[in-house]
Amino acid sequence: MSISALIGISLLILSISLFVYQVMMAFMDMGVSDEFNFENVTLADLVDVSTIERVEGISSIYVQTVAETLIEMPLAILLFAGAIVFFFFHAFTNERRVRKS
Image 1 (cartoon, rainbow, N blue to C red):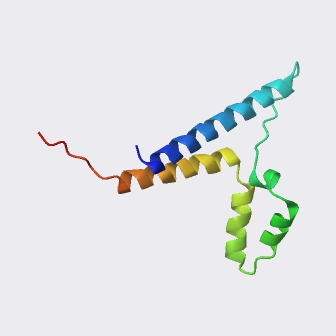
Image 2: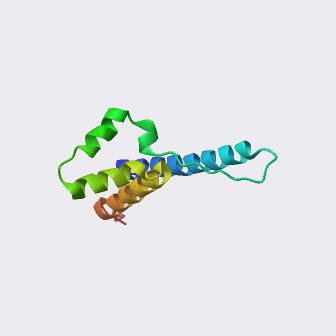
Image 3: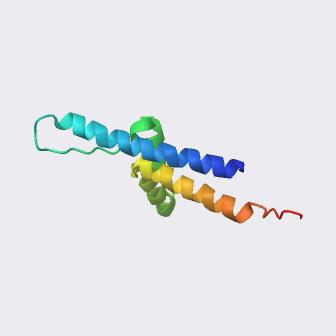
């Protein structure tokens, strides 16, 4: 198994476990009420405020929009997308091994 496949599997496991954690926290916060409050963890929750201010100072509006979208996107989706990228990388760069009889 190649390094890219291992990274993809690790990212997939991390994204699934983060999603399960968020669902469990929503159920635990629910208590006896009927309100299900699911809160996504984003990169904006994890990075420093100066990083977000630096993104707002980017001169190109297109790059700034992409950076803001990535920062505000749920972390579980970003990890899952990273896993898919590494699985594709593994699929296209892995050498086909042929057994010699």
